Image (cartoon, rainbow, N blue to C red; front, side, top):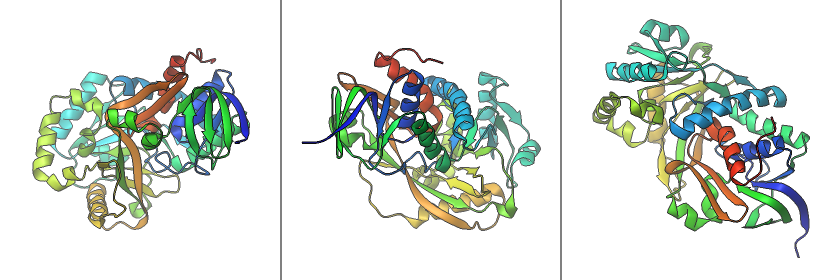
Length: 377
């Protein structure tokens, strides 16, 4: 007979950023909250990413969620005491068709969201190689240190009364209760926020929505010459990965050219970008591979490609690697998966790799769908 761990108005399964966003939102609504996490801390996508809340480049629900999340990120940084900067994003164009996409995007969005830059203005903001032809600045985007932000938010929520059950596996989910490896948690409502591990709980739901695991290759390197680089930096490859640019007529030209000139980089799903960590090193990447279960063997050619292309972007020589890792996130047909597999239970998954950007905007709608009232802010 399992012990009873207690009860809460809302039980959240998963202490990554999506789970923390739902715990925070429930707490703001005056509800009691418990969080179940199988590890003793967050170690998944929430700490392995660029720390880039890139709301501006989104579209549809993702844009709406990302814009709403900005205020919450800023408030939490002040309250929980983690590093956050409103540095914006510099989009670097290294071909005229990329510059055309950025000009079309700026025209669609307006100057408050995107401002065009000359090649010289790009070089004033970030180090670049000689092939830059211009770019754009997206001033509203945020950066955080993902390795510090998620743990700081968890500590902050715990200090406010959220009950965290770390190193505790959620075995079964049923209306009104979560049965765990340490006992039963009674719940008024349950939010399952396990990301790419959705199939561990609801395999048929994961299969229905074609949810797979996206594996990324990422590295941390020294900044050339100790450069201070405030904005996040993205490139023409990034234009192919963000829905906001799909409305730009010239995007097809960029896709066709990059596929023709660099089929190997397109084939590995390169999103050539980087952000600078508070310690001055750069997080660089990344490549994308999709499967339900990935082989455990990492191809060194992926890292070599990322390093070579990043050095070229920076106009630098060989980069000094400090760390390498495999990122992971849930990928599906749509950018978000919200489902009700049982009464009082919601699955909440960001299935597009933008959990840091959108989770705090998604959470209020999920809790509204559970009938838990409007946010008390």
